[in-house]
Image 1: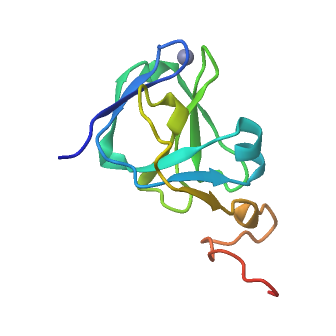
Image 2 (image 1 turned 90 degrees about the vertical axis):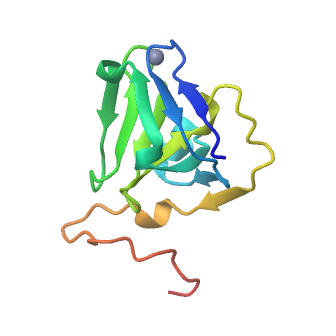
Image 3 (image 1 turned 60 degrees about the horizontal axis):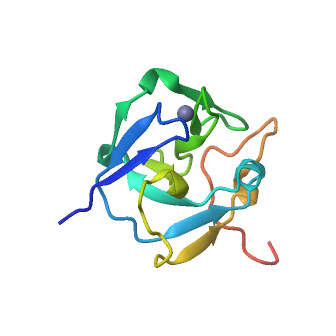
Amino acid sequence: MVGVHRGSCHCGGVRFTVRSDPVERTTCDCSLCVKRNAVMVKVPEAALSIDAGEDLLATYQWNSRRAQHHFCRHCGIYVFHRKRAAPDHFGVNLFCLDEFDGEALPLRATEGVGMTLVCDDPRAEWPGPRVAGD
Ligand SMILES: [Zn+2]
């Protein structure tokens, strides 16, 4: 049976439900995730529904502008984002999942720095993790 996990921002204006069971937690070393100290779980888009406060969601985009980072415009808390490398998935702020104990999930560090390129000729797709010596 798939778990049902309720989530919310700090002020409670944004409320959402995740209907999937995350298998891991991820961190990311891109400049945005470092500053928001994000620990995330990956959720298929069909498994996330917004229950309240959709009008409170603001969206931040930067760099390739492909990922959409949603936060509550009232309390400022990052709740989830549509992923750049897997646009049919959301990265959900683990700490916004109410009463969800993620401590038992493995923690994987993803490399965001390698995909944060803005230049005249941006890569169309993320080529994957860099290989040492490349
Ligand atoms: Zn809020």
